[in-house]
Length: 178
Image 1 (cartoon, rainbow, N blue to C red):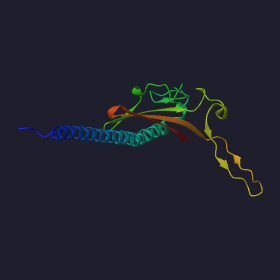
Image 2: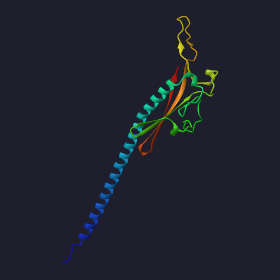
Image 3: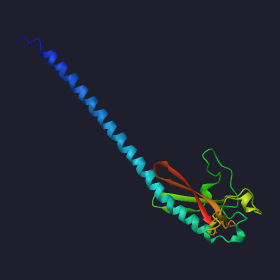
Image 4: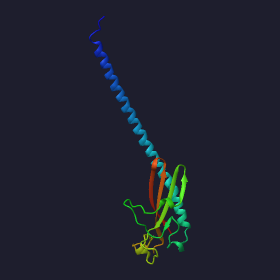
């Protein structure tokens, strides 16, 4: 019995088509996996940003509880009376692992606060610190608004949130006291 001359070609074409379909299915699976990884990473980052709010609130509460007489001295591992050296990203070069920690689910929130001053013992707040001056409205005749003496000191809070899959997020915010 002789075989038809086209039979070998048909099997070869079918094998090639199956190989192409298999490669297409693998590429589609890989694209789906990459999309899932990207959305997962975005979710971790967004959750870290939400957890940072807890760190900012704790930093502000500790700052409000700090005695005004103690503002010229560093306090523990969370407060510095003057701006600390910064790295290339503008983050203070402090030991965040020693800073107060708050557990928020699988995330760890650490915070530090710096008084935005160039010296420890402040004698001239307008020259040595970042202060907030409140405008005092003048009369209708005197249209120029006068600035009140600085009555609010500025502090920079830096919050680090560490979480699953080596997620690390830093948040900085200016806080006002006074």
